[in-house]
Amino acid sequence: NAGVTQTPKFRVLKTGQSMTLLCAQDMNHEYMYWYRQDPGMGLRLIHYSVGEGTTAKGEVPDGYNVSRLKKQNFLLGLESAAPSQTSVYFCASTGQANTEAFFGQGTRLTVV
Amino acid sequence: GIQVEQSPPDLILQEGANSTLRCNFSDSVNNLQWFHQNPWGQLINLFYIPSGTKQNGRLSATTVATERYSLLYISSSQTTDSGVYFCAVDTNAGGTSYGKLTFGQGTILTVHP
Image 1: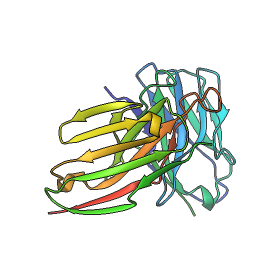
Image 2 (image 1 turned 120 degrees about the vertical axis):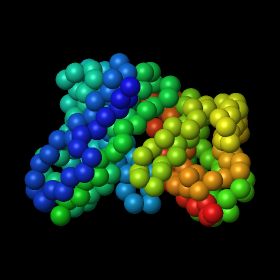
Image 3 (image 1 turned 90 degrees about the vertical axis):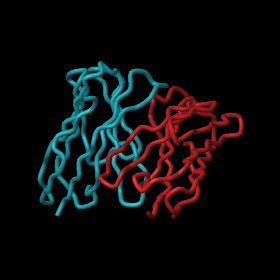
């Protein structure tokens, strides 16, 4: 049972490059989320989705775009990476709004 | 938005000691989870506990929703308990929240052999 899987696990980008982070869940969850974690801090919500074809902004959405074309996948895109986007990115999913959230293993992104 | 404060920020223990971590939150919650982030960065679910008490081996948690706090107890600590412990909450206080979690800053636990 894979749960929530993130791809890739590590990536180094040059300033201005673009990339897409993939999150896949096999639990048939309706809700999916992208968070970022900066050193010494808790996680902060970037974007989220309440179902296939829907997306919404979280606390820190600037510089990111997302898409949820399939229920099981939630993509996070950086169109023009900046050093301030150096962080660890976590994807999560839940079956319903008030139930336990499950997290992926994280993607460590460095922008130089 | 809801504020989540964890204490203490750092905790150093000898193996075998017990500890209590606290999470205070500023509004009513409909979801509260405790996570352990291990030294490899992985977030491990410990408890889903919006209210009441739960136990899992050496760990237990209590949430008193009416007084807006939760406690995580670790008994007979082991070196593998080291890492960062996060409390995260979801609130409907401002309307439907869609399961969005607000995290505390975490408690860094170091257990020495």
